[in-house]
Amino acid sequence: MKKPSLLLAAFAVLLGMTARAADDVLRIGMIGLDTSHVPAFTGMLNDTAHKKHLAGARVVVAFPGGSPDIESSWNRVKGYTEEIKTKWGVRIVDSVAEVVANCDAIMIESVDGRAHLPFAKEVFGKGKPVYIDKPLGGNLREVLAIAALAEKTNTPLFSSSSLRYGPGLIELKEARIGRMLGAISYGPCALEPHHTDLYWYGVHATESLYTVMGTGCEKVSRVTTADTDVVTGVWKDGRTGVVYGVRNGKAAYRVTAFGTTAVRDSKEGYDYAYLMKEILAFFKTRKAPVPLAETVELMAYMEAADESKRAGGALVSIADVIAKNSPKR
Image (cartoon, rainbow, N blue to C red; front, top):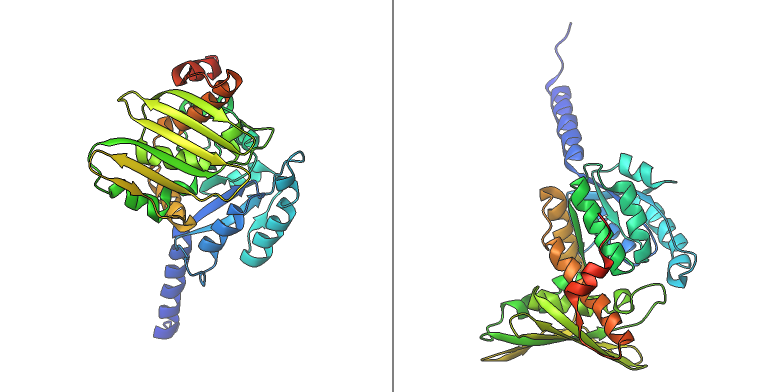
């Protein structure tokens, strides 16, 4: 029998290396294809020609989902589903279970926060890390139920607005301003009737505020008009954190931080690539870059704002709001 040629041997080695390289690619499953984040994230991962391509992971399978009572969901889900299928070769399946069975990590992307708890119940406890896009739930009760389920099933969980990783906000966090006294975060604040008010769009400005302030807010009050919301939080160390939301006018995502030696403003803008890098690192390490407790508190801040609105602007305790909405054990 003739020995295989060096060329054939080299080809066999190359095939082996290619197979191992393919095995090293993280397979991502996506659930809920009704947000612009879906093509944005998929393009960065699956398109090697993308100017911000991130190697080492691909979206390989997805379930469309969609909410018939939210226009920005039902009128986009078909288009985004077709886009990631035809442009980037994502396999579209008929059930969440098929997504779970064919991936290494999961992204719940549904624009409707109410869909996140039902999806979480189907994917938690399967040994796979899960990223849930903003808002974590449709209200605080759902958020706390998701957090409790993640703990019960030992599921690595990460949730964040992309605004947390805006380059301007990262620079602001590193600025020297002495002892921080407080901050004002502002941005769009459109409402959606099925969600706690700030959960729908005010979550971005709230996430930005918490990026700078950190946890420790104890009480929240809210002043609301047809055009704006002003939510003020008092932290346990005396700092104050304000979210200024704009509905009917020009709005920009920015944060102003006040310190004992300086006042600094963040530069406007955000970059999905920064968030996607954090998501990929989380999928590989199974350690969330933002503690779940911080995400829960910022969601409670927004829920307390709704309570304050109903109480005519009175101060509302975050601890009381969390206790009121906690699932029974």
